[in-house]
Image 1 (cartoon, rainbow, N blue to C red):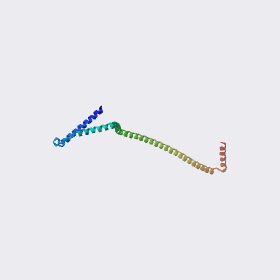
Image 2 (cartoon, helix red, strand yellow):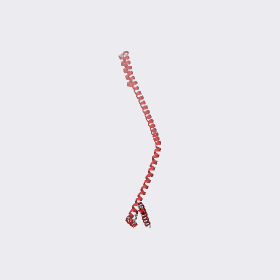
Image 3 (spheres, one colour):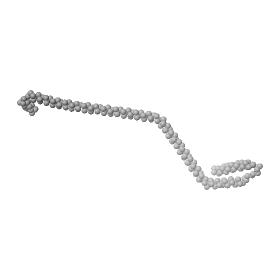
Image 4 (cartoon, rainbow, N blue to C red):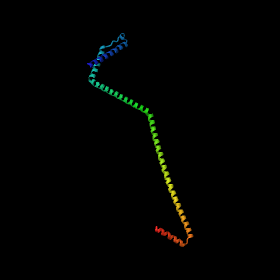
Length: 195
């Protein structure tokens, strides 16, 4: 029923537009004064011919045209919904970017504070390590100085002992006779052997 109503409305619209066109043509050529008269039979046959051709096209291709239009409508709706989703995603990304830009100054300060703290910790570690190394070097220098001092004292004692022994030997050789010298050696050898 709807189909028939649509066809009828379409045909009446075509006839109305055709009538207006004919009326405009008649007034443009001088109207009734010019003696021009329009052939309504020819016009009606052309309109009927058009309606028949349109009906045949609609009969054979109407379903395909409907399917094409439905598919096209469905595709357009999908594209629109996809564009809406993209628009929402873009708005969300824009919001995220704006937030990150707003937070960028805070993040920069936080990063700088972290690097300062790490730098201070590294500085303290380096100073502590340097102090320990200096303490170790000082201890090693003291130990080396003590060792060298002991070795020097021992060397001086040895030299002094040798010098005292030589001086004592000279004094003894000058004051003791050979017999006293032999007695003294025997006495000390006896003490050394007995002990």
